[in-house]
Image (cartoon, rainbow, N blue to C red; front, side, top):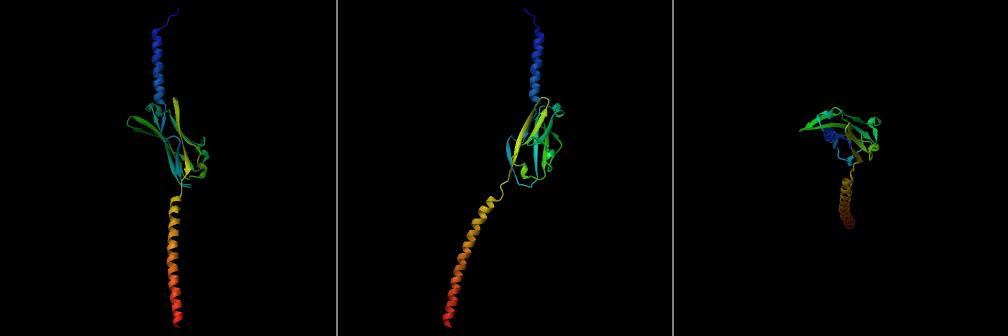
Length: 178
């Protein structure tokens, strides 16, 4: 029968559980933007997209990186897009790392492709993907303007027809007098 060191087994178990607890608490978690959200954007407009990651501890601030990908590639391929510098903030005793993606000109090529924020640390990573979609433009306006214009034109036509009848009657009456 093999002799086992009970103290060694106990120490291994404690270290193993401690490592698992630390690993879980150190993995960054993206809190903003929500996953798979669609954001309506008018073509040509400016938009700032915010990504925030909740970090497990202050020490993970120094070793966590946060960045954006557009359609699976780094943003350098897009001339109208710039990434801000990561900022650290604290809410209560929670630490956050935030980065802004500045889009100076929302071109249609950015519509319906994945724009992903990634927070990565030695203990794990999280990501959140959003999609820009074309903003609905003017459908309500035209739905109101066209019927209203038709009503106004109809009223003018009726008003004009009545005046035309009165005018022709008056002219006809004047020619009968002479």
